[in-house]
Image (cartoon, rainbow, N blue to C red; front, side):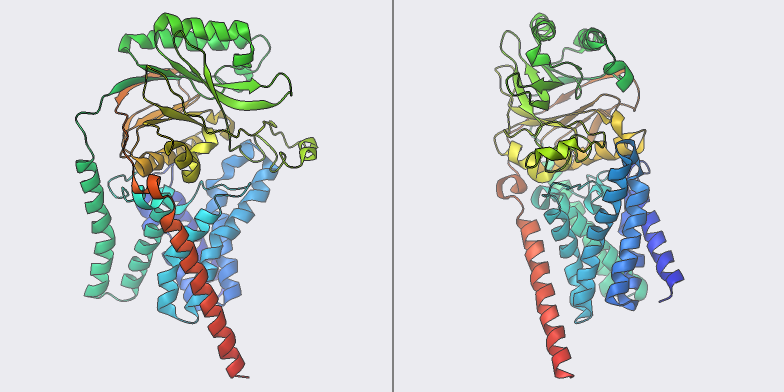
Length: 493
């Protein structure tokens, strides 16, 4: 294959994949986005497969994640090539197996994609933002099976559809038509069944008000702005009472003070909650006055009771902390503009007599299925997400980030309420359908009812069975094929 052909295939694949994600919302593009790469798999050497799929990853992720520059240019320059390598890795594994058995190579690819995506979600630089499964967040009527496989299983399904399309392009047979049809119809039937049978009329509903303050950083963190910020949310919360909410949610770092450690400001919020008789969740910085440690936190204010707090566990690498600085404190001396927050350690569930138990995730944490599962397992009935996406730049990132929350609702069949400072705030039902949402960059309040529940999905109960299986079948297949290639080479000497 010529260099020109390799680049054209890589480019067209990247363009299709970019279109599958927000802000374009053409999720069906993902069903053909990998098809050009299969020509590279068939016609190139292993080294060329690595190179061209890496180039494809550079283009796809470079276009889609260019917004990272708003946080850190250096982080973007370092992150995209590394992410592109791990994006290319499943195709390299597929090529190793394909050269021994073409049919088995294609069979293993969906598992390789899911397995690599899952393994990559655990390290300090983990960033499961543009995984293939997230491209389908706009199609909840297809992907209810994520309650078994998580989002990584959706990635695997996207690859299966691509393979079916590619085989059909190469040779149109009834068997291949049936294969493609099955990969579309079966998930749809499962999804419709789950949505229909999962409705419970006896579930008690509660009303949630999301306060989107739309406060720019220069207004939030300027000297003397503390009272103005808190009073803004106080005023908007009072206005939201016309809809009789049972819970009011303010976004990440809505209060630009160490709220729980500042008696005057804490009492200001507590008196509001006491007078309204409605709990409030707010994002806020917090500090240990003895050690000087600081955290990005969420506080749960309850009428006539002491507030509860959760400290963010998974921080944004190079944005909120330098990776591994908890193990090597000297890394904090490297200044890339990061905030140097400390990592929280406790998975806190907010409880009160007013509301069912719930967890509050802060911003970046909502993209990790395993982390969310560790909260949900403790008995939450709905999920709250607070975020401040103003740091990520306009449009692209806020829309991508918001839609990922759909997958969390489907995986656990829990309603999700997402409150963002500058947008996009949204309320999502337990099947991933967006009930109500805001636009970006508007100061507004949205209110809607949700139905908390104690449903336990397969994924919640048993975890990453599919991902573990995918990883080990991929590893086994690769080891066997490498052994066979070595054995074959030895025989030919």
